[in-house]
Image 1 (tube, rainbow, N blue to C red):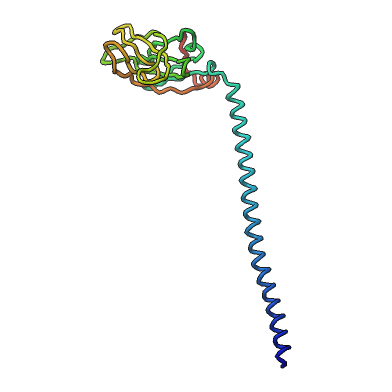
Image 2 (cartoon, rainbow, N blue to C red; image 1 turned 60 degrees about the vertical axis):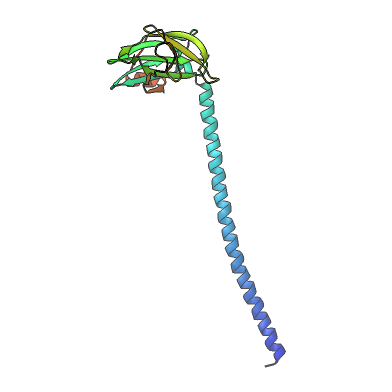
Length: 196
């Protein structure tokens, strides 16, 4: 066989193999890119769905009036609900109450929008609280509702539940857990509602 013919045949075979190899390699790249496009499309759909969910939640929150919510306070298996709107007055209303056998104080601070519930017993003594204006919590720039107990005349910062002046200065009220619900849920649960 002529060297020129052999070189031509090898060249044609090389081109065919090279083309086929390139095609296989290109097909793999195309498959990989198609997979990536599919993943990105799924992520874009997921992001759009999340964006829609966030917009819906925001719209619901904007319609929500905190004064229509109820704080359910539960102590030792007993519960009572306190309507935020009943506490959110000017001046703020303080709920001195008893749930089961536990004396509690429930309050809302309109300055920092904090809702708190505490056990009213300190050092074996049950305290009764009244609203005592608003001022900064000592050592902070946070303006907070304060209340004063009638028994010792100590002033307490509502948010942290700490006595900031008077004979009980430094004492802390024990927090009682609470949850927020709408009126429909409170009614369905059959929870007693505090009446100011």
